[in-house]
Image 1 (cartoon, rainbow, N blue to C red):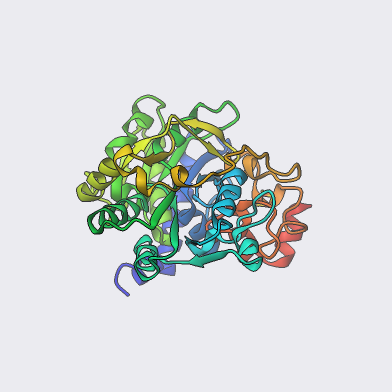
Image 2 (image 1 turned 90 degrees about the horizontal axis):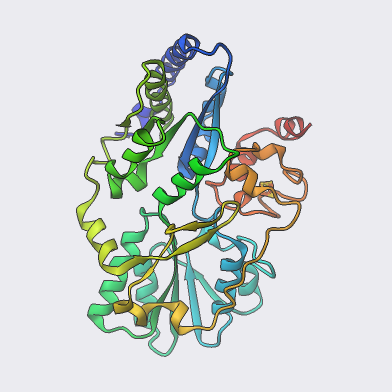
Length: 376
Ligand code: SF4
């Protein structure tokens, strides 16, 4: 398959791994680790799925960043979803991976088992179709994700507006990547030498918004695709910058992510959303301007204005170490409950729920022996 098979070629992967090894050995600092954060959950999934880490020299340490929107959803927001879903007459619609994220009382899946009308959809337009089909019901779409999914929600709201549909609202939890990377770079306990930039977000926002990372924080960033050769080539590009003393924003994923982003998507985003003063992230706390809400012109489509929601801050359970894993301070298997009380079947934390979560990806693609051995 074009753009897939050629990016999974074993021989080319082995050749790239050799080049990476040579480059890593030639960088000053002997065996000092080089920490590279892959921002996006899609990269995390690919790294574990294809065993990319096993191809890398010991000196390179990958840090699995916060780019999985399901994983960074705090418990309080899940409780808000459940509260809306349990309102009489509501059909609550969501992408499938958000169904099992634990709230403080229950997940959306458990709410459904108890009688709430929670339905899985593949796009916000599916939710709008439900609203058209059930004019006597209130349909709420759980808007979740970074700039990658923001435009689809925005376009759905614009469509609902054009059709004057009044039984459709969005519970908006869309988040933005740039303030988040900045918050990570400002965090005192994080050691990151370079970034693999999120390919799909970059497809929407382009490359210019990352310039401050190179200019102000003096870290290289390479926008990376999601196949194993994409990831390996991007790591090689990052190392080349480090070796040559450069800090630049480079684009390995140019076949999809244009430098200027997607103008139509950016226009839809600008038309429908405004920045929130702050947004709460699981494990990272409150980050200024890191989330969006609907502009007042679209208030009638805003579920937060239509329904009373608890809007409470709920701390993660004590044993849960999702925050440390999200910041790259701990590896998934170093969490105290990894593989014991926290598994994909019984997730204690959000990183074990989504296939893009570091814990779920590591659990899924490692052997039982590796899982128990890694903990010890
Ligand atoms: S093992 Fe579970 S609780 Fe621990 S960091 Fe991973 S998801 Fe969170």
